[in-house]
Image (cartoon, rainbow, N blue to C red; front, side, top):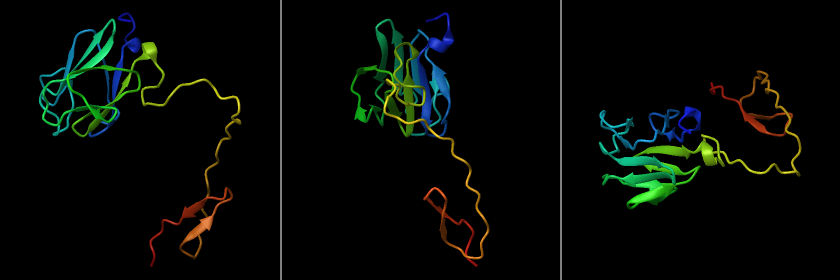
Length: 157
C-alpha cells in the first residue's frame, strides 16, 4: 500500500468552506483541526484547534475525538472515544463533512457513490440533449418535449 499513494485511504471534504479538497492518510497518525500546526488543517471556525485524530493501522483506520467542543460525528452519531471507520463513512467535524474512502476495501468511490453488482433489469441509459428554450412574449412555464416543465427565468416587466 505504501508503494502507491493512490491506494492510501482518502478523506474528501464533501461540504464546508474547503469542499472538494482531499487528504491521503499516511501510516503516521494525523491530527485534524483548525490550528495551522496540525497535520490536516480544516478551515472551519466550529472545529477545535486539535479536534480529532485519524490513524491508519494494519487492522484498519480509526478516528478518535480529542475532547473537541462540538464533538465528532460519524454517520450521524456522536463518537465517544475511538471508532473504526469503514469505506463510505461520513464524518462531521464542526460544520464540515468529510467522506472516508478506502481503496483497499472500496465499496464506494471518493464522493460516496456505492458500487454494487450490476443490475440485469436496467435499460441502457440514453444521452440527454440540451433543451433549447425559444424566446416567447409570454412569461411563465412551458412544457418541453420530454414532459418536464421548464421555468422561464426572465424577470416580469
